[in-house]
Length: 527
Image (cartoon, rainbow, N blue to C red; front, side, top):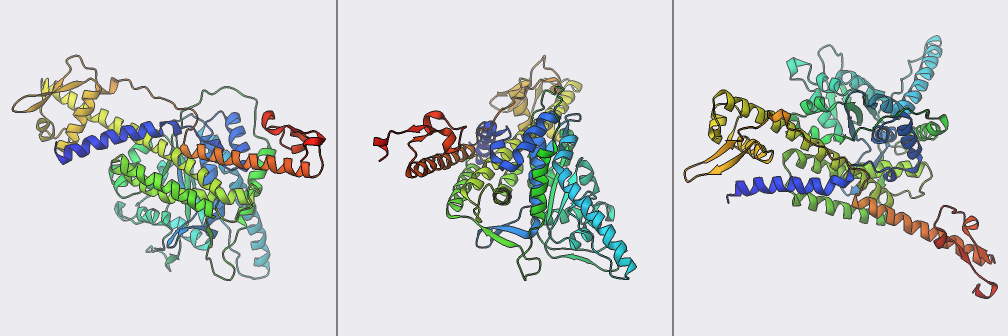
């Protein structure tokens, strides 16, 4: 077997094994988001009749954006990550993406509206006093051109969030200058990596210089549009790999009288206001505060990274997935920081350093995104393979061919090269459209005489419920250990205080298992 053939078989087998490993991680892991966000995600999904993913993913992006550039996580010396994540919800038209997106993002919109009202009031007062015009605070943008983004980013060094309910416009807006050869596309590649950027346009009096970019992105898109947008060029240059894709199954929508009450929205908005008040290092202009791992947190992160890198090597992933897997190292750190700061500032934890629980929560979310990216690319490759096999069948029928040689296909310019032709014919064989036949002189592909059109082949989608990420299991174990330690700590306190009967109510954890929580002792047993 040649090295090339071995590599093709390894990659194909690896992709199948990867899909099998991640298949149990497609369900959104509500347990892996901070407590303060759960009511809005769960109750919002019930009210809107949508997958919880539709709310949770843009909400996490907005929380990271509210923290902005004020905090970075130091993974180790020379490696720091911000809280900016780029997320995209994929779903067909009519699947309640827009109302879910509005619910997830309305808190920041409400806060920014308050800033606008304050600005207008201050502007009016200062004009009457002939004072300098105040700066308008911004956190949200929807105009995706760099020319529009530049002044906003310059005037708001904490960073901004790009909210796009339909992301096709974002892609269309790139490189609209210089006949499609502008720099907007390169700007976005740089912005993800928090690099510096300079904007020059002919009509500008002065350049706009952004020393450190910070841009979080979230939006929605229909599957077909995303498939067209993620062309090979964007897979190769790494743009596609910057996107965290969520592609949940549709829900069976039912009428409900449920709504989302202000008591559920309120705590999230208040937390966002709190995060937006976070500042940079004192006395250092626009320099973020550096957050580190706790000892246990770093141990957990190292464990996650070792597992991730072994997975990366084990499956021999094809180019597009390799690029996504490479970016997941940074995303594991970014999500760890977002999750931990939400937990810290909502009172869920008192640790100033990123702890073990936050890391396992983030790792569970990373597994979720890996599963959805693998699912989407699997469908994308299948769609592309079906389209190419359709071309082969039409060409063969037109020319009266029932037997096909690989070179006949690519020399007729049906498919551009021999490698792609072989891969498409292999896929056709798997789908029963033909079979390979080896002779002494050549290898030929025999079309099935009664084959259907390739586009008529029905494919069944397996929908996975729940989430079986190994890190979610670790998270549950860790939480159970903490809960058990809390229970016995309270029991010991009550016994020390002289209480002879300790029950669930006195412990203060009535939802715990009675067999674990209820401890009764006679006076003689107190010792």
